[in-house]
Length: 121
Image 1 (cartoon, helix red, strand yellow):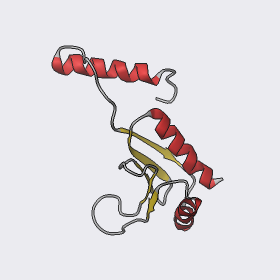
Image 2 (cartoon, one colour):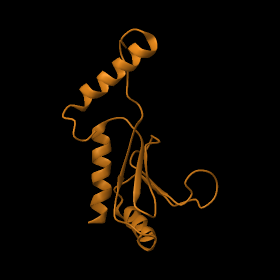
Image 3 (cartoon, helix red, strand yellow):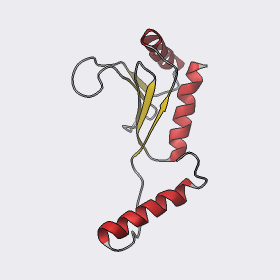
Image 4 (cartoon, one colour):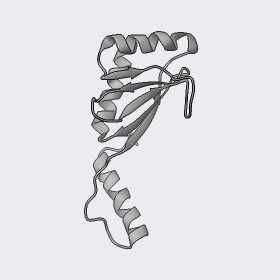
């Protein structure tokens, strides 16, 4: 997906193809509301807690949530929320996998990824 020059055209073609396939007519309008992404950073269990602390201390993000260690889902991941009134977040695993959920634009994804990576440097 990162190698595609015009991501909006690509998304539009996927929406139209899906609409024609499912509804037998093109989509008149749509709004992207949940873009997800994933990337890897260099991380290990020993560095993980220190990294979450650095993210929290940087005050770049609205909220940083420590891993719950109980309950459902990936209980060992920390969560980083870049926006105050939205559920968009980055889920960071101790092994370095960063999953990004519920972003509205590609630019939000890129900006949030770059902010997180800036804490590593």
